[in-house]
Length: 163
Image (cartoon, rainbow, N blue to C red; front, side, top):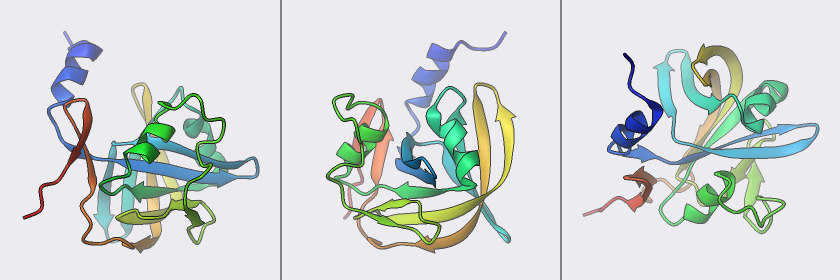
């Protein structure tokens, strides 16, 4: 018998992850979603993957855009993570008031991120209630390299102790 979703969630809270906001741009405009299911997949060819809940708008936006940008958030960017995780329902435009540039693909890149990867959608696979999107990394930058990343652990945002 498989474990239930709540037990899995509780166990996974014990795993520290980085925090990213995955963005895309379609003719309808920009979109973003907070994601911690992100990892590099291959160096040759350069690939990464993200996992997106099938019930989210991002699940539809990424294929329409033909790609995505992974913004690796830095320490102090909790507000960006909260906005794109839907924790700020008072905001009609989660991009409003943020420093936002564009990756070569045109998808949004936030100012102050540790790094970002601009990806073309290569493949997608079903993964239970999520879809695994594999992207070919076309451009990667680390504009705030050396700055600590934002972490998520135990149900909350955490910081790396740099010594």
